[in-house]
Image 1 (cartoon, rainbow, N blue to C red):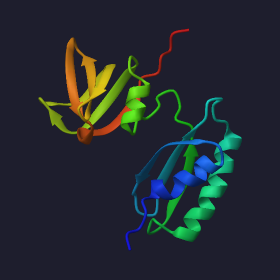
Image 2 (cartoon, rainbow, N blue to C red; image 1 turned 90 degrees about the vertical axis):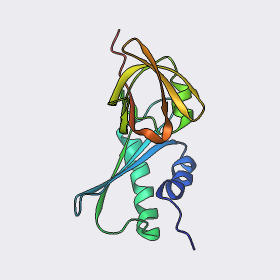
Image 3 (cartoon, rainbow, N blue to C red; image 1 turned 120 degrees about the horizontal axis):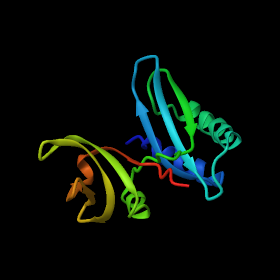
Image 4 (cartoon, rainbow, N blue to C red; image 1 turned 30 degrees about the vertical axis):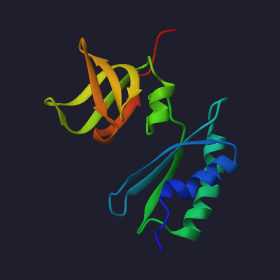
Length: 151
């Protein structure tokens, strides 16, 4: 029997509490491994929200035990430099400034910063350094919004 992914295990719990599961990151570091869960809701996230979700997720993770070994669970808001995990996240923020780190170089580059111009054909369109780039989703290691600090 195939074990469910950590995201598919946690998503119904997070949504059942009234939050959006933005994404899940796992950083294996031996005894210092980290499971980071990003949550959001239209009115924003406070420390109480993170504590509430953390208690529920801890219970599920203890019972299901999907990750071997020790790790720390961290529940967080996406923050101003919101990570983008799925095509729908990219679509939602078209027009915003983003930074991308790729798994492997694209025309000699692994890092891009620019305006998110669109989502099409299994990738994102980014306008960076006076050029338009089509970057396939499978090449993206990490993507974040660049905070808009204009007031």
